[in-house]
Length: 427
Ligand SMILES: NC(=O)C1=CN([C@@H]2O[C@H](COP(=O)(O)OP(=O)(O)OC[C@H]3O[C@@H](n4cnc5c(N)ncnc54)[C@H](O)[C@@H]3O)[C@@H](O)[C@H]2O)C=CC1
Ligand SMILES: O=C(CO)COP(=O)(O)O
Image (spheres, protein in one colour):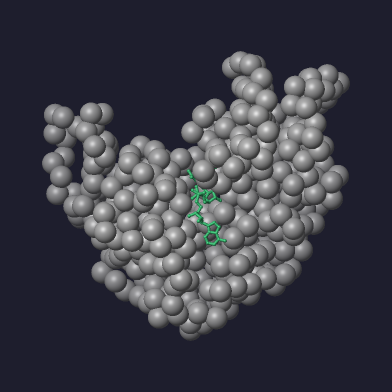
């Protein structure tokens, strides 16, 4: 049993102890008037071990005495915050940025000059770049974590593929929440196209209510972790799980991805409503009807309806629809206040994936023949120049319908994707 070196149950701090089969980790939340607390003495998540995932596929990890070597791609808000979290959990963490200024600043002053500017990153976080990481560095890693917007995933995986050692695959994790614009592809599909089905089958996805700026302040946060490989999901969960960053595993990466992408579109809708001056009842209506729509679209696609009740589903929907910390909510709010989309995007300073995702969602809705009036309304405001206020009035004037209905369609897109991965539907 390992117990944190920090004092348990001191009068000053509230402590939450989480018991796992072989260890107890003590959690000291940040004190309200102090700078963010680091937890250097906490034991890291348990070691990766070499395990087989299926008769056809073996994930190989190095035994590293509880420490994993992790390379994070993308030093924006979320990549930086997750690199911070993993480095603070005693893993050996590298972060790649295309920006020489960010690389230099992280290495010299442990600060990111563009994102999470107030935060001091741990000394054991090493930044690399601006060139794409070398095959040597990539092949020395146990884990590759992609924290770049969906539009950049294909390009980066294309660069990654020839640099991987097929005989020693790392755990590959994705945290982006979006749908690719031109193809309407989920990331699972992009991985299959660029790296092949064997890598896609063990790719792992993390999603859930998790604002970067709260994670670096150790605000207790929980996420969903899903993969077609239970083992990969468990290993990713082991890597990240801490009392202030709790992980829940699942086996529906398609549902998890759709939930993460769709909630951004509804967050834009919720922001628009607030920007127009509507109040709490309206936001609750949008969140609930948005959840019904998300579940309908996801089920028609072939995801499990239950996934939309998860942290990645209603959890993240609730978070992003109700906070100005959300960039997607902010885009909607500013549209509701009458600002132009181009100007909002230019001045936002960070990605709002819901804007591009609204396009892909519209195509998916049309293809599946699913009724999704809120998502359609957001698309029309963003891309057809419809007036926000008029579109909201139109939505409010639609006739009453049955409250809950799941589509009877068969989930063809997911079936096609599974076929591409050469899996049957029981996988
Ligand atoms: N910020 C947050 O709280 C959360 C963000 N996410 C998701 O994580 C993903 C990344 O978001 P953030 O880090 O917040 O965005 P961000 O806008 O703060 O940073 C994005 C980073 O990716 C880099 N990037 C963009 N395109 C790239 C490309 N083609 N190749 C290499 N690097 C590229 C940018 O230079 C920047 O450093 C998004 O899909 C977002 O939805 C998920 C959970 C929470
Ligand atoms: O996904 C997020 C939190 O879970 C971040 O939301 P935004 O991208 O809208 O800021």
